[in-house]
Length: 507
Image (cartoon, rainbow, N blue to C red; front, side):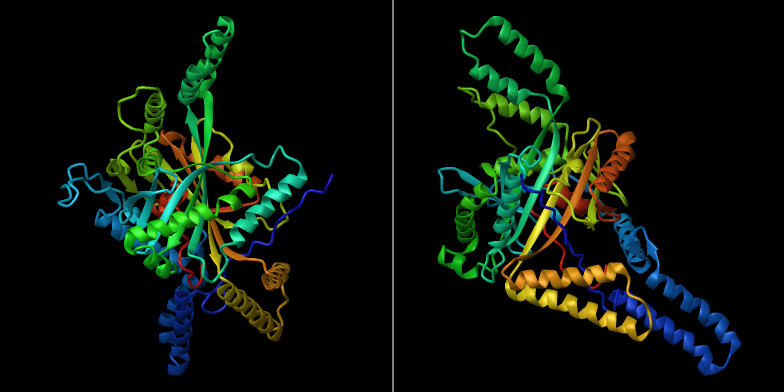
C-alpha cells in the first residue's frame, strides 16, 4: 500500500508598507521619530517631558497588538464600529412593508449589510430548468450555486485520496489562466439538524404494499427515534464570473444580464467533467427559490424544519401547494444586529472566525474533519474561498514576496541579527512555490471563514470554545472577526461566494 501523502506550504500574505509595518504603522513610527528629535533640536528638558511620552504612545500604537490586530488597526475598527452603533447602522429591520416596485409589482429582496446590493436573477440552465444567479452590480459579478455530494476521504485508501486531491487541484488550476472569466470558487459546508422528514417521505413512497408488516413497523420506529437526533451535512459549490473579464463573451451572447447569464451557464457546463474527476457529484444547480431558501435557513434556523416538511410534502404526487423554496423577497432575516463580537439574527446568534494561520507542519488530506463534526448544541458552517491568479499576476506576486524577504534578510545581516527558523522556512516555501509556478502549477489566494450558530445565547461561548479546540486539533489558528461579524456571516454562513478582500498593505 502506498504511503499517505502529506500537504503543506501555505503562505500568509505579508505585504507591509515597510517590513511588517502597515502604511498607518509606518506613519506612526515616522511621527514618533520626528517628535523624539524635537527636544534634541531645542536642547530643552521641558520639551522632552512632553515629546517623549507622545513618541512612546505612537510607538506602542505602531507595534502593539490587541486581539490579534495591531493597536492602530484595532482603534480604527473600534471607532468605526462605535460610529455605526451611534448611527444605528448595525441594526437591520426587514422591509416587510417596503413599497412594491413600479416595474415588477413585487417587493425587493431585503438583505442586511454587504448583501443589500445583491440581486437574485433567473436564467435557463440549458437542461430545461431554471438557474438562480446572485448578481452583485457593484463588483460586476454573477454567482451560481450548486449542491454537491462527495464520497469523502476518510474511508478510502491512500491512492484514491491522493487522486481525488490531485483532481481538485487540477480543477482549480484550470482557472489560473489570463483569460479565465471565473474569478472565484467557493466551497461551503454546514451541519444542520435533521428531523428525518425527507427520509420518512422517501420511505413512504418506496415501501411496497407486500412488504412485511413487522419490517415496516421496525423501520418506522427507528426513524422516529433516530430522526430528531440526526444531523445533515449540506455542501455547496459557488462559481463566480466577472463581467469585466468576460466582456467580449457577454457581448457576443447578447450583452447585459442575459448575456452574462448565458456565459456563466456555458462555463458551468464546461466544468462538469472536471468536477466528476474530483469526486464531486452535482445534485442540483439551485434555482432562484431554492437559493433564497438556503439564505433564509441560515438567518432563521427554526425555519429549517418547516421548510423540510413542506418540501418533502411537495414531492408527493398531486401536490398543489406552494412550490419548494422561498420567495426571494423573504430570503433575509426579519431583524438582525451586528455586535462587536457576535451577530444576532432572528432567533439565533452567530460568531464568525477567520483562519489566520494554516498548519505549519505537513498534514494529511483529512486534517479539516474535526471542524465540522456534529454538535447537538450548535450548528457549524465553513466556507473556503479560492481566487485563482493568472500566470502574470502570480509571477509578480511571488517575485514581490521573494524580493521583500530577501531585502529583510540583508537588513538583518547588516545589523548583526540572526535569522530565525521561521524566516528561513518562509523563504524556502517562497522559493518552492515560485519553482512550482514556473513548472506549470497554478497559484490561488485562499481563505476560510467559520461560523458557529446557536439558538440559545447561554450556549454561545461553550460552542465557540469547542470550535476553537477543534481548530487547534486541526492545526489552525483562528481569529474572531471583531467588529465585522455581519461581513463574516455573509462569507462563512452563506454559500454566496462572497470574495476575498483586496490585497492590502499590512495585517
